[in-house]
Image (cartoon, rainbow, N blue to C red; front, side, top):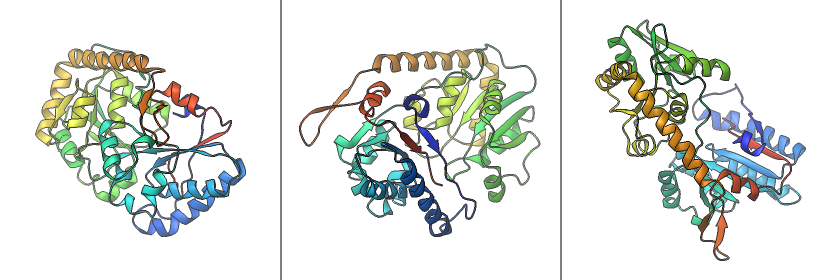
Length: 339
């Protein structure tokens, strides 16, 4: 999105408190002050925020209140932003209904947003684009030991223990899990893991791309309905076999995947199938990638008519039209998160 719109991406992390409710009382106030200070210095015309944390909405409202001139605010709303926990942040519903655009990335999140009281004319469904493939398309597994890459956040919805058990049953395969190694270690995932399981921690973009290019397949898992996995989009871009949790949303978005019920047995079978029928499943993934590209091209410039309190208007549906909608501002800042 930053590349499409020319935003300045800003991260404002803090290492004081990384976990638990103490973060809300220690880290968030410091990050809030840093965010406001940056906004006051740079005076952007467009502010794009990613929620959760929903406290970013309060910061955006405060800056809009004290700023001179029009400030366009776009909230990129992810699934958990509409959860009971994050909706308990004061004024969340009112603030979402007062900003310019509330972005959602699939119809299920849109329905969830409507259910919690977000006004229909504020909502804009903008599907994720499939990125460019990190490596050349191949019809046989890369040379060397077979490797499966599983991008992880080590959140409760990920069946990591089942994945580790599946790797234990497949000693000839490597399983590489990316993500926060410290979090994984604190949970206990590194205890008694088999030798073929590796926790890579976060990787630079180039190294992550090389890891995917050298992989036999990608594993994208969640136990929750309604979660649109970014790793599944990366799997489509890779052109490799992809093993995906069998949820209604993921099956509708990525129909060519090898679907699993998140059990160790199901994962073991799926990995073996991905190796045995690599060319077939890789071709299916590339076919889906081509379909996504054609779909994005067909939608380019096509607006979606939505209801508005002042009457019917054309709201942007594609990146091209959304870019035109935001053209009035010369300086843009995108806060991905303050967590």
